[in-house]
Image (cartoon, rainbow, N blue to C red; front, side):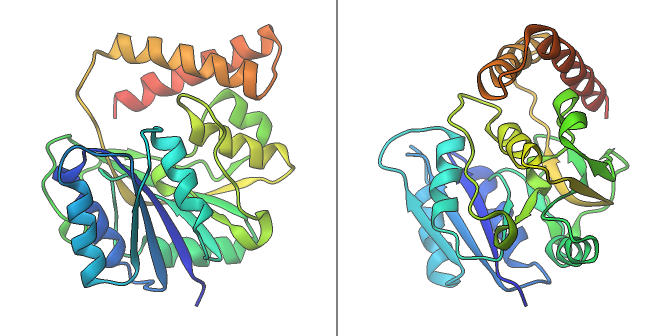
Length: 257
């Protein structure tokens, strides 16, 4: 049974952290380690993590020495990973119980080092557990196959569903960007000649946040995606413009789900 290293950043997420952790620990694929890096939270997040670690040795928390953001917190956890696979989950999202089991089988069948799945969207005030979730029809569908060219125009991979094969790709860290570090990681893997495969079955729950207007979110997307295309991918201005148009269209489309 392959070991899965689950990478989770946490910052002032005590209200949702417990449900996220439980969704990992109740996976039908139980051979895992949960690597949580707390980014200097000012709430009870670190105390909660220590409580979980005392109850289950698979939970391996640490606290970052200084605030660095979600990307650096993920990288700190990835550097501690020992698993055959590395998977990602934020501290306010959840996995359905068979997520890892189904995704590992899917990755093995397709010989795919980078995989992702469809996922459900739930409200910011969602209080349930993954084990008793009732499908709600709000599904972001995974594309079955994604290469570098397609990924430049749209980020098809929901970070809460992504998993890569560490034995094939080696340890992969996210780039040092202010935001969109996850998108940068997927692009770097695909740029190396690998393709990503999507499992159509929805196997995770994404918590939609209500803070900020739709228009302000789009302006933020434009700023950070432009930096990714120009500074990380070194695209020309015309190619960056085309890619950015696709990213904004995707964000508007997903917001309607």
